[in-house]
Image (spheres, rainbow, N blue to C red):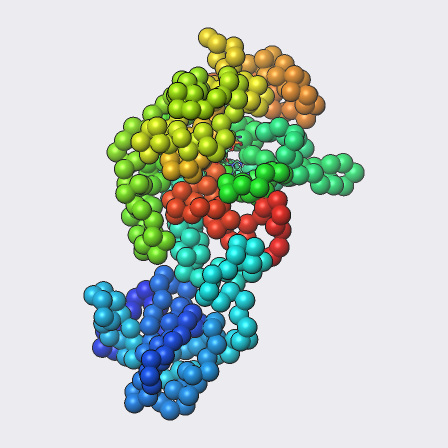
Length: 435
Ligand code: 4AD
Ligand code: MG
């Protein structure tokens, strides 16, 4: 009878039995006559396969000497407990070579610079750190959908090709659209607003595009956004929703991604502490004051950048913090203006602690037809592109609000990844479109 094919993650259930692992050679070393093959098979973790001359068949033993990194193999051997408790290895009985990899593997296990790794992203994805990150990404996707689905939100996808801007015209990707022009979407929000008037509570989950000229560790030119939109909701309501959502996301991630976060050496105490704490809500004005008391020299109207965001995290003891009520000049045409202070747009940003920066941007929307029309014109946008959007204020307009969560920044925060390029399989950055 041939040995069962087993995944490395399930190996502990097979102690004392012979099993077959189908995978790739991640690393190898030898000590005297013994060879150690480190196998990976796509499941979390790697497995040490010990090749002993008196246990392994002679042909396989010879083969093990010449195996190159990333060669694909079927390795059969008996499972035993390793040196450390909870660790398992196999004593190899036979090896079937599926494909001998070219000997010059570009992503060898020595340290490589970021540029080299990005050039070989299609191979870099194979290392345990990167696969752990992609698993967390996939799990967060499900956790996020479950959160909204369980609360009666209807998933309604927004178009990728749009006739106009949502977040200002400076960062639009333009493309030919038959005899006219189209733009890649910057945000699904305007469409989500229409959907909210149809179903009450909706969310979009899809790619968005921004011709970001900035080369930072937080900016992609193509990133995914989750954008809930709720009818009969105001700024406080949307902060309540965002807070409940983030706590759910982190607590579910801690439960479901334990193995991955261990591989990533994530300090999970930093995440655990946010679950039972109230997120501080601070006005832009107050946060400006606090920053200036701590050595910054900001004047009213200035936007916060990375150093300000990192400081805010520190000032609030590593808690995510909402900043709300921004100078209206810094915000897009759809923000509702504070009726009590006409300088202020009723928006909120959620700043993740430890320098992970703004992960959510949201607002109450302008619901009045005339005011919105005026804002569109003042922003230099073409009215005819927004007639349909204005219709929403013409036929049963209600107060409404929503937010956008940057998916990759959230993956970065949960995983503790210092650069956003690791949070998406094939990142698009100002200087990278290949592979
Ligand atoms: O703050 P932003 O621009 O808000 C909007 O687009 C709204 N229309 C959302 C809404 O209310 N429905 O973007 C939302 C979030 C940011 O907080 C950030 O997390 C992420 O999207 N984001 C980016 N992530 C990666 N790369 C970029 N270039 C990003 N720009 C924004
Ligand atoms: Mg923003």
